[in-house]
Figure (cartoon, rainbow, N blue to C red):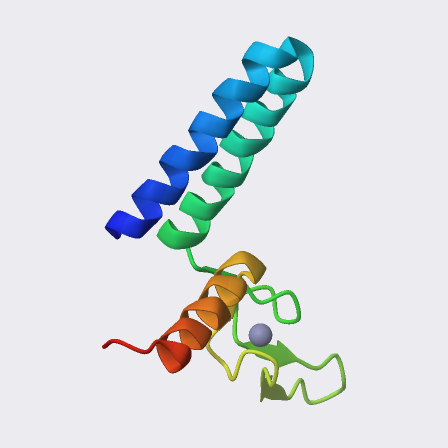
Length: 104
Ligand SMILES: [Zn+2]
């Protein structure tokens, strides 16, 4: 985690605390949504891949014909893995940031 990420997370927590003190019911919902989003972000960081839905993680398809031919899965290029949507969004944002940053 970069210092900027930590600062952003602290700001979100601070805003959540202010919201809770003003409107307790909506504040709790905001806190739960924040924790849910943070949990999903963590899980996308820790486990960036999911099994390919087309071949169910095997990387190949077995045809049901007479000779039972085996084909490699085209969607995952025979790896059996697909990038999760949250990780794909993170990667796109990271690519955008590294391309548009001024001070490197
Ligand atoms: Zn596949």
